[in-house]
Length: 133
Image 1 (cartoon, rainbow, N blue to C red):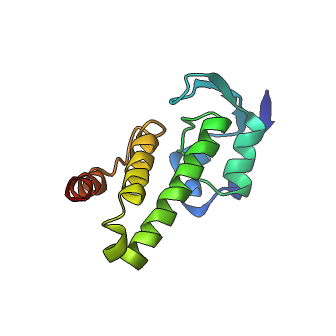
Image 2: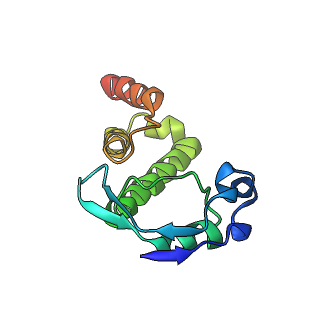
Image 3: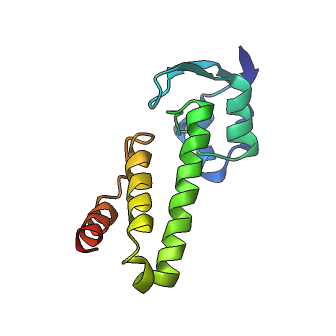
């Protein structure tokens, strides 16, 4: 499917991109999910909404299907929650094997959803803390 593009609606940074002068329409993009390997489609309509309404950067690429993307966002939210708990109660939590193990498992699970941004330092910290518990 094809949907007309309105680059004037893009984010400011996207309007400064080379694509601004060349993109006149969105077309369905077929790709394989990086996590589950399912073949899926980034529809032209979804692209229009993503770039023109949500103002996402025009140079982004989809890596995950919708289901895996939702799971990845849940993991990211859980990791953020753990980080907030850690900041508030570090002294107690560094002795909590269940918390530390769950946090480490989330970090390891996240790595199966994104091919970048692995938090090696935090994983090493958790491994060290678990060794000492």
